[in-house]
Length: 324
Ligand code: ADP
Ligand code: TRP
Image 1 (cartoon, helix red, strand yellow):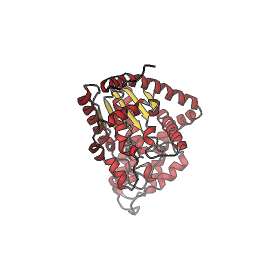
Image 2: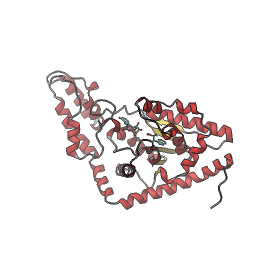
Image 3: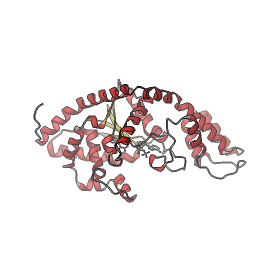
Image 4: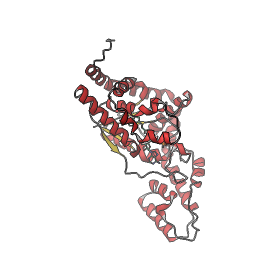
């Protein structure tokens, strides 16, 4: 099974990204042929500072490698190292009905937030379709928010095949819904855009500070508390053993426990859980050549998969390119 997914380099990764996406990506690489890439072209739809684009691209590379992506097995690359995706996106844009893109919720949400949309934001799902179909991917693991984009990808593939003959493989979404939405320190969905994140690679001091700021209700210490509505508990259960989670649930319900106590334990557990990865990341940071080599090698392997598919697409559509 060929598994493919992309992450936008739009800031430092947080534990919502880890539990909602990265953990599953890393688990899937064991049993499958996995391709994971850093969607730097997509990032340009919302990021216009070249230094930040470069910095975040490197950050995502370091984050994935530090967390255990195996570059010998998994093809790990930058989207821009396969520029043919842009060529394919153009060809797809000519079989994509406007209405399909106009219905996209993520686009409509951005407009509703008052963001002045560029054309790239509107055609974002077409490039995403090219990312997926150029590798004849079978399975695309993404968060629930991306499901519609995978449906658009399937529609585009079907339309292309109808117009030009069976050329593309229709992929399946793999919605990583098992993990509920991870709340941020303010109780909303944890997200880079809300400044409510706990970063995966935060140092113990700053990490503890963030955890102590998690919003809780004002139930007095003596009173029984409901673990199921508590943001601290929601995070605690992601990192504590099942036994310890059950103990904390009982302590909440019994009363006599302040949120400061569960926060302190949460900070300890998060520090422990990510400690080995923090060390990995520090050694990787010292070796930028290694990271560049991994991405360059991933790019070569990705191009080798993409090129025959592009040949089929060009042949099917009548696009002629001189032989090199
Ligand atoms: P952000 O909202 O911080 O910009 P992205 O939209 O870049 O995050 O998400 C990258 C991946 O991480 C997606 O697959 C998304 O579903 C997942 N993800 C992001 N935030 C959370 C969260 N709070 N809980 C669970 N999964 C999340
Ligand atoms: N749109 C995805 C996100 O924001 C990132 C992405 C780009 C992607 N291309 C992709 C995900 C192809 C899966 C497959 O999370």
